[in-house]
Length: 525
Image 1 (cartoon, rainbow, N blue to C red):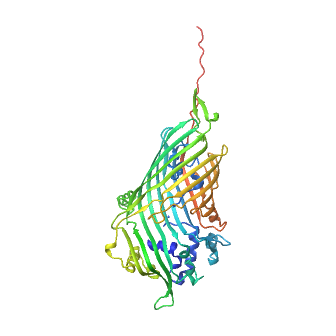
Image 2 (image 1 turned 30 degrees about the horizontal axis):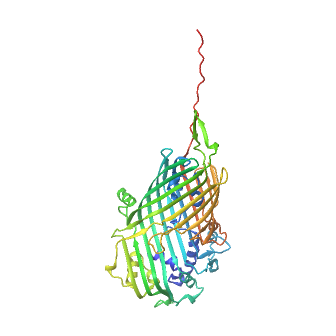
Image 3 (image 1 turned 180 degrees about the vertical axis):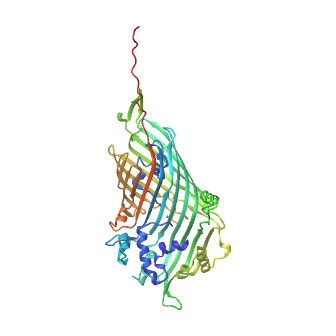
């Protein structure tokens, strides 16, 4: 819903009644600490496990070529889930964690929130990534395939000016000086999306010559849009005012739009009967959903392999390359992920508008009284004098396309150092999710049955420093790309956590030496 995006992410100050100010404080704090469904993530990286040689299907989400010549003959993932939230504006600075604060039932105080005032644009995002059953299978030493299932849900606010973001202090009762001030030339982008995908991956070895080894891969994804909402403001002049509600002693906040160019829309989740197999199948395959589309991931990997005689083994008189070892000194992987979009075009479930107006206003108390998304849209359209002829019944929501560059260096037999660069390539005003750029250094110790990694990253378009940790034991792993937020360390801007479990991870095995029976000696007659 548009209001569900506007309230927590662009105008936390705009909760319309003063009696709700305490709820705003809690929402701001929790928004820094926990991720909710309706965000990516769109930004689900799982940096601790993604570059592991024992990641199985989890390596596909950063580079589809990873499954070729992997350490697994077969890998079946049961599930993986990630939740988190982050921003580059407000940080949590309190003597206790939010979980402890909630458990003790103590008041959330304004001084627990600290602003980052650097004059730069602000971003906020929250989301969840659920990776369902998936498998990868090595058909031969050259060819591998995989099938994956996934559901992503996220909400983002990008390109939010610092001046407008600071209006949250009005609702907090800290500073009324931000009211009645013109904020001109605003460009902001808000998106929310929930969608599922079914992926088919293929990867193969394309070069194995001396120390040089190259593999390439592709993933084709069928996308099913569950629900989406967006609001893009371009060159918009606005100011916030406080007005008394007629007939009461309560106040409401009104946003005056002196000049506005707004694109906004909503795709509703269809009603369906889970007990009806036809309804459920139609929803999963996109036939009864608000929209569907296609996506693609492309990638290649180069490995420099030393001519170490330990990598050569002899079985039954023949020489083989050891299948059970990682043979590279360093590995370079490059991929372009999430190419594509979802076309929301069900006329019964989709509303979209592109309007340019002057001298309009929106009473956030009245829009908050709406009980359904349709009522909210009706109110907005009424305030903006939108006619029925301006309604559109389709829009495209882009995937969070990103360029991934990954370098993995082998320090010793079990120790590795990894560098990861993820650069989002979607424009700031695009409809759909954006991948916020990051750079991470991840040392890790890797064994067949146990692994530990600690990613140190510059996230949120290289603006926030985070430290994470990941532990894998047998078929189970758990980790965080921002453990400081989870443990209340270092005035965090957010937090995330992920967990996953696999079944039947069958590792590559070398051919066994065949036993030969001793020759029998023939006795003379």
